[in-house]
Length: 481
Image (cartoon, rainbow, N blue to C red):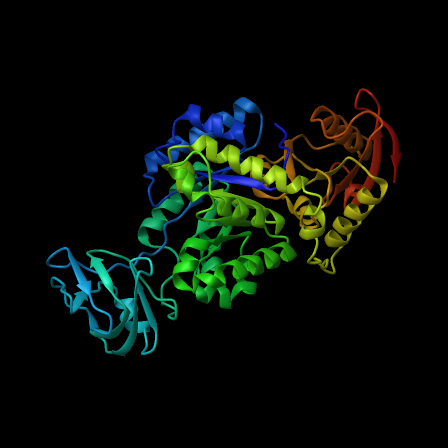
């Protein structure tokens, strides 16, 4: 199934979208990757959702990616004696290691890591940032904080520490069990929450190996400080704007979104923009104008994918939300200013043969006015480098590796197609022409550019470029080397 847009759509599965029939309808409406949120999914639920997505992919003979999003560490205050208290502005509030019912003066905090790492002057944000406090003193058993913004606080609400690098990794015991389970199922992408530094990604990589690609969620100030190293360590990035907007001034989030998107694109790593994109469609069949502009901005910035969370998981209009996302993306990419805006920031190629080939492929295809770029790829690297250039024509990723085809479903502009290894260069050209013709990417007398970054059938296929034109049956009639 060929999409009429290049940005990809990620949809979260949940009670509103867990039935196989609904998953199929969402795929037909435009979903390229389905997200399983392990914060709300049991192992049995994850298995059922995985099976449904794979069934839909097989039925439609189209690779569909699955993203398993791990919960990560969650820090919460203890219980209040009355269940809820009101904390006044200017008050001194204490967090104690002694387990006892809390009051308006203080509460139990069951996280020794916080006591070990927090320092006077650090900010504490409670209940998604609704309450704000500043630490004024601390010892091993107590933290005293001045209340800057007070309000109502109930038991077990979350606490965030934007200024504090905590001595914890991104995986809890629950996450380790969830990770083992979803890897056994065979998901394509693992999203990591609570990334603070590149070492967090490296540690998880030791557990994941090459069984799945790793998507680092950028949601903490410490991750911004180590962004370049995190991009280098991960396979992709997610701009987790919800948590990022809690832990940092919300007015900084749009600029950070652009910064993360730009750096991920420069590195040739897919980047997903997520959270509250069409939030009003949880309960409304149409979005706000601001939400439409928000999605359009991400598309204009050249993000690889835009993601729906509650809209498709628990919303009343999951299908309409996907259709709306699809229409917005198509309209933006059809805008006369799209190419100029998406290429406004020049992405310089790295000094490698792969980047040189990808840059040349883009330039040649644009100059000769070809219909598509066809990439033979085993690991996905060749297709990723071509997509990094954001060419203004379709990209086909031909691969004999099913996991590669599914992972590329998250990447801007790439239509993945499963095919066997070509035996020779002649076979490579013939296969590429036939598939591009059958999939509707090229018409009779039209041309395609064919590139490969690894040996297929012959060592001569490595880092090669060919231009081929097709006849009315999709067979090559001319080849330019």
